[in-house]
Amino acid sequence: MFGALVRINDKLEPIPDLAEKIDTSADAKVYTFTLKKGLTFSDGKPLTAADVAFTIERAVDKRTGSYWRGRLLALDGAADFGDQKADKIKGLETPDDYTIKMTLTTPDSTWLITLGDFNGLSILPKHILESTAPDQMAKAPFAFAPTPSGGAFTFADWKADQYLQVKRNETYAGGPKAKLDTIFFKAISQQDVGLAQLDKGEVDLMAGLPATEADRLRKNASLTVTSVPSPSVTFLAFNFGRDTPLKDKRVRQAMMYAIDRAGIVKEVLKGEGTVVNSTIIGPDWMGIPEGLNPYAFDPNKAKQLLKDANWNSSTKLNLIYIPGNKINDAWLPIVQQQFKDVGINVDLTQLDGTEYTKRVVTGATPTTTGDFDIAEVDGGVFRADPNVSAKYFETSSFVPAGGNYGHYSNPQADDLFKQGRTTPDKTQRKQIYTNLAKLLNEECPWVFLWSPNSITAYNKRLVGFKPPSYANSFMWNAEEWSVTK
Image (cartoon, rainbow, N blue to C red; front, side, top):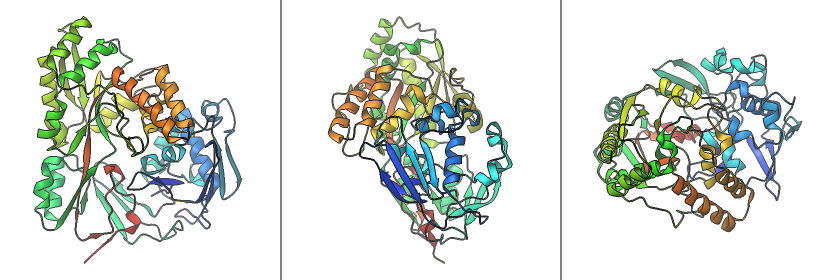
């Protein structure tokens, strides 16, 4: 709905969106964006460089609690501005209405991928939100009826836990106007309900389908089903802010050995996935690093590691997750039993999305973790670039400002991430990230499980849909969609 400077396409590449031109300095430290001419918000007000600057300023301001803060702190002066120690971001300049110049504290060859994350940093209307205090952004009327906006679609209607409706933005000047008049999103918490509606033609598109349903859906003559390797990883995140045995890496390694990951991929995911041993899994120039411990299923090895760590078998851990995903609902009890088989007692706790987010993300602070021992998580665009993992493991990315859910902190990892993104040569970057993958593989800050395939089904009446590898980015080219009669 909003439009961004850049967005990620179906091949996980950053492409211009509202930007007409992007210039990058030879050292990848200065990025200059030129906006397309004639951009407006859906209320007719001009969309200019001032709106981009305002968006970034609010995103890094710690009072807003934005998930983008950690991703944008590479801007020179962003940390001081966000902590109210400076009245402007030194590395953010807008010499005219069409130009945004970003200067980073250190070179970063992955900056465009960062800006394109989550389908791109949404540009907000300064003229609407400037008067809203930073700590009130999430409570402002705009948060519940986000209009005006500058993307190909604009907000039409919304009802909590039921639906979201967007309509074509008739003032859109960022490219060709959307072909569809409107798109109606149904909020469906149980996959079975969505699958039934897809079968009946009541839903035109469903992304992130369970592997167990793919073959059945392919028999429906009205549907097209696609399956491609996703950039995402399914994992168990540990809370390092709690004084539990999980702080001992031998315990975490034992949990890796205790799970028959290959067996689960074969039987539960029906082969629609690949076991991973770190989050460094792409892109093509990186590949899968060599020299990693494969953590092949070995309950005896797990028991020995627990013995070496003086594991107390009476210890109880709690694993939280959101129910309703058929695949997750199937493999989690299997993992629970496999943990139990080696002497690790884990209780499974089901939470709704709001409570889960509070426990893991919004309930955390920069110095305290959320309320969990272990959290089941799916997602990420790890195949896009090895530096994507920085958003989950760097100390500067502690939630709520980043994706480091358990506040894992390792100076060696921080240094390797910095080296990797400041080095433009891919051969050198590959060696740096191979060393990083080996470190993460040994440390096991997460239980690395698998990278599932991205399975999408859509009605054949939907024309122009291009299935992305990242299921959450299924709207990346929605302005090109149309439907046959």
